[in-house]
Amino acid sequence: MRFAVNYSPAAARLYESGLIDVDLFKCPDFPEVVAAARMQAEVYVHFPLESGPGTTTVEQLDEVAALAGDTGTRLINTHAYVRRRDYPALDGHGGDSPEVLISVIDRVVADVAALCARFGPDRVIVENVIYTGREREDFLFPGVRAELLQEVIRQTGCGLLLDLSHARISCQYADWEPWEYLDSLPVDRLRELHVTGLAEVGGVLTDHMPLTEGDLGFFSDAMRRVRSGAWATPEILAFEYGGVGPPFAWRTDPGVIAGQVPMLRDLAQG
Image (tube, rainbow, N blue to C red; front, side, top):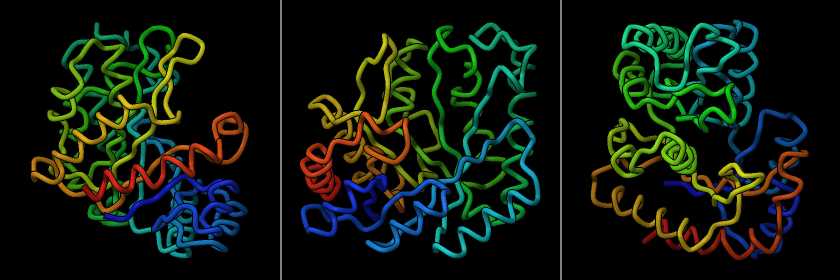
């Protein structure tokens, strides 16, 4: 299992000075960011692909293939978003019939299958996304149903990118017990694991925050499942704190990175 952190200039400076140790920098698909990160350490790319809308083009996949090849990125990720704009007829908050869920699954499967045909199912991973209730209508309830991820992975043979914070946020708004939900996901196909802290921002539970004691305890419980064999061992564990651009400008504290990267790596290694 290789340890990664979101690339940021702050993380790069800490790495260069020997204050943090990572195997990889996790980068968005921005050429200038990838170029800067590669001057410091090995990188891999987290792509913005979405499965379900049916809008990914051959040209986009060519770009993904080129960047993945150039950076040595093995795992090609996609997000199983079920958005209001793509499914305007859905209630989207638990009031849809089983037949509606099947139709959503079929659309996501079709997009993931196209990725698998291009890159091979052993390289494709599907990430669980967020549901936050009716406060944010764009992200709909079917997108976080365990059945969706189970069926997509069963039908396509791809792997799972498990974002612990996404799962915890979804459970908060769907009123699910987090460990029951997590253990119901296809964790036997786990290939990449993401961890961040959680905090309320503007009244909404938000990820990409510094880790609290509660977050660290939750992560430790997840790692016990990995070490026991209850979950597969991921190829990559990524601490998704910090980054580049406006979404991360207010949550890229060098002190947090310097203090929490070594602590998280130690916990991951047991």
